[in-house]
Length: 289
Image 1 (cartoon, rainbow, N blue to C red):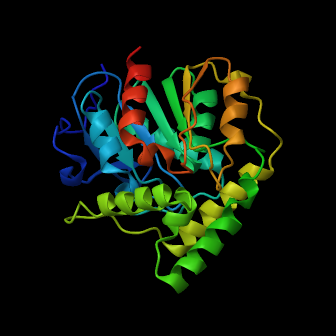
Image 2 (tube, rainbow, N blue to C red):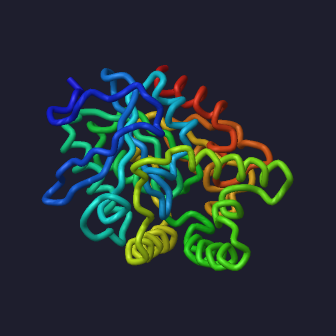
């Protein structure tokens, strides 16, 4: 029932070898990769600010794909996808829904990280029949405290990174402790494992559009989460400096059907990457329960 009409069977190979494919969505080509078993409800991964296909931790994708059909994709105008990038979260959500339907899926699960978590909330609320379960990591509700400051933090970290020749993800995703710095270095090494047919980095105009969308999301009236009726699993590090961890706790309290993973110790925005084994085990258990 959930096998797409125009898509080859997913491969069980590792993410670093997964072929990049393209789906036509209203005249634009959306780049995506898929792997894992060919049956069951697909798990759609919605990536963070500035993220492309190669920004997903292969340990997370491979771990999930051991038991689930997993699909990563570039939203409109990002990485290998054509078109211009939307500057609202709501428009990104509409694009994601069109992408899912272009693959012929009638029901999916969602994993949204950071900005992808904003998008996942909109899809879950607006498409209740399409979405079965949701995993939200390092994210927060519209109007959540600190979210409108993400663009400024990102620009500061990028400039500092350029001066110090250090990837800004180290300071944005991980804690500034010995453990956090080591976890960050390990993560960046894993992101290099794919050497062939890598995705294109996000362009400056697309990054600007995403930053505008995040600022708008952070400055909206606080969202009413009671309209999200699907089961939701929430995860984050205990010291997220991008989307403050208090947002995760707030969502867990306000979503009607939520489960909270205890906040990962000595971890930040990239907590699910730092604790990839624990996260994969918990997410699979939640999705299969």
